Image (cartoon, rainbow, N blue to C red):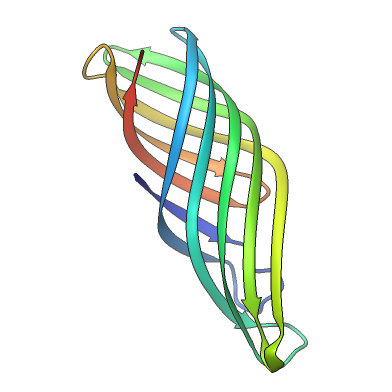
Length: 157
């Protein structure tokens, strides 16, 4: 499990974008085809959050909840330094945002927004055993505007 920080774009509301912390998780698999490069496929669940605000041009409060998840294919560039790896990733992600909101006068809205977008990030891994390592990483998804800070354990086959 890891912790993510999500920046939510709220262009239709009067408040600025806000940051929400929620536990998220990811499952990734890949192939390190050289000491300096790998390819990875992963599923990312960015968590759930609640929001509220005033809609521009309307009187009343809108509140609701949302969640985000993504499937990504990345090329990873690696700089091995002793038992550590510094790495950067760039790739393609298919992401989905789901929103449920209610507003004044009993209005209800449900939206499912899918985006194809760029994903990129950087991280460090400590390889404390030939098959085991721990890592910390920052990941960014462009169009859904999510920053995720990830820590976890790697196992190599």
